[in-house]
Image (tube, rainbow, N blue to C red):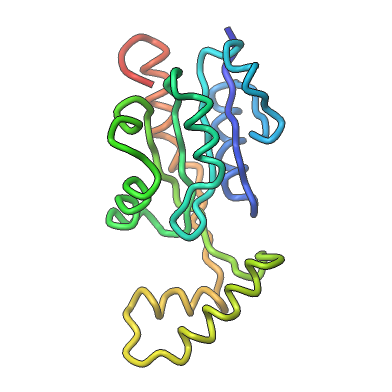
Length: 178
């Protein structure tokens, strides 16, 4: 049986993590857009890595539908640097409790670089930025978001995939749930 790391990445951070996981596990790597539902039965182990944008995980609804009967490892790559409260918001916003009990969920920090944003989303961000700049009594989080417009962040580091690799290897050896 084959194993695969699928990814959905807009700006490259998620793809970097997916590439590292595929290399470390010696699994196939493929963009989720190039994967077909009919191929699911060809794979024993599946990792689905995707970016988080405005709290929502990209292509997750489709992945959850496709893999409703096959447990997979789901990796969210977002802009925060492992903030537990923000990770919990991502979990609650994107999954039901039964989905979290069935699949394995992990979070890896990506980064924020608003200069890479294109199209209508760039226009929306421009409006958002103007509103935030004019706001009185901004919170620390709001100030940090504004800081991101001029100082991009990048928290991508290979060390963050270690817990994922360990869980996959333990599941492969029969020691745990994937």
